[in-house]
Structures are given as C-alpha cells and as structure tokens.
View 1 (cartoon, rainbow, N blue to C red):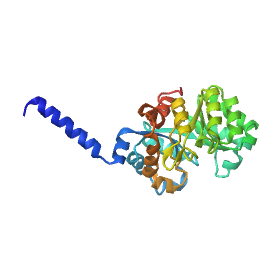
View 2 (view 1 turned 135 degrees about the vertical axis):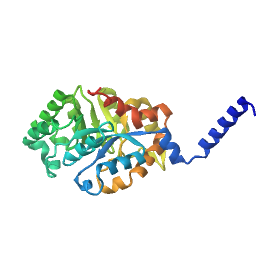
View 3 (view 1 turned 90 degrees about the vertical axis):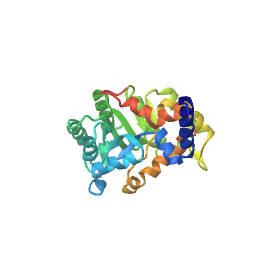
View 4 (view 1 turned 120 degrees about the horizontal axis):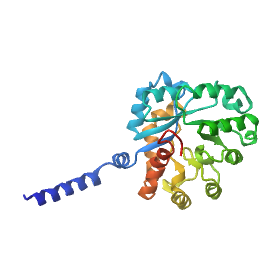
Length: 281
C-alpha cells in the first residue's frame, strides 16, 4: 500500500468513527460549555467536595463556570480549587433569609465590601429582586458598588426589575437569569437591541423548544443576537448536580440545531469573552 493510499484509508476510518460515535460523545467533543449559572451552596459541601464537583463538571463537558453560592464561601471553595475554571460571583445573602430581604437591608453593603476582598470576584449575583423593589436605595448602592469595582450583575428578576437595573448599570454587563422565564421573545429582542450590555442566561427558559425542536422565533432571536446569550444549568438543588451531565446534554440538543458558530458562541465563547481577563468586557 502506497503512502497516499494509507492516508486515504486513515481519513476514511476517521470519518467512519465520527459518524458511528454516539450523539453524546459528539456533543461533548464539539460543544464545550461555559456554564453561566452554577450554584455551590452549603447543602452540597459535605455531599460533594470541590474536587468531586469539578469532576462532575468535567464529565458534563463544562470547561468553565460562573459560580455563586449561599453563603458565598461555596464560590470561594470552588475558586480556590480551580481558579482557572471558576468565575466567582458574590450573592448579597449573608444569611439564607437575605434572599427575600437583602434589597431592604443596608448592612448588606458592608457584607459585600468585606467579602469582595477575599478573592477576585467578577460579579454580584445571582440575586433575587422583585421589580417593585428595584429602585430601593440598597439596590442602587449595590449597582453603584458593582460599577465602581468593574463587576457584572446577575439578576433573577422580572421585566420591571431588569429595566430598572439596565437604567442604573449603563456600562457594565447585566446577566438576566433565565431570560425572564416567560417574557415574550419580541420583548427580549427589543431589550437586547436597546441595551448592548444585556446578556440572557437560558437555564429554565420557557418556550424555546417544541417537542425538542428549537422554535423558529428562538432560532432567529439567537442567530440575530448570538453574542448575547449564555448557557446555564442552575444547580440550585443537590438533584441538579446529580443530573448535571443530563442537563448539559439537553442544552446541547437545542444548541446543535443552531449554526455551528452561533452554538459555540452561546455554549462557550460569549461567557469566555466576558470573563477572560482581569476586567470584564
């Protein structure tokens, strides 16, 4: 067999291997994920030590992740175990009750300042904020702190809340957790067009697919604004950690219906571009 014949044979064998590989293997090979919504909270620390959590992420094809926790020590634990993989965010929750009261509690500001000195946090959130409370003085001060420290915001809020945050955080990234859940796609398009620092994180987002197929409206929205979406799994309960690989493969199911470059942006490149250096972009 000549050298040329050997090269042709090897190419054919490689193509046969690729086309007979399992869909999950292809998904993991083709689409690494930068997860835009991971929690590592106190209910996981004993069950899943940092190295095991990182192993689960690797098995799911999650190369990097935006991580927050209640309390914040969880994000610190993962960051110290793998600073090259973990982008730590700080929640304004000193205690569990603060999920429902932080926006009315001025003491949160000192808590945030003290915690931000511990590791190089890249953002504040993911925080829960009712839109009716988004203009309260504590929220305004938290946004001001984020702008002073060049930090992004990650907000679980309604349409009223995201609009108020965008008015205040005019020059830093604002990540809308779950893309507002069920906010109309036409409204998302308007907000994205008007606010260049708005990013839509897609965990638990409703209405994107029908019977596993990405809807035409969402296909066009994602291709038109391909640099503004992030993929997330939201491990807010231990059960979500157990299912992490399944959740990531489910995300790849709709990602792979997009053009390859668009899928890569949403799965990995957008978040990596935002948090690839010492300052957000």
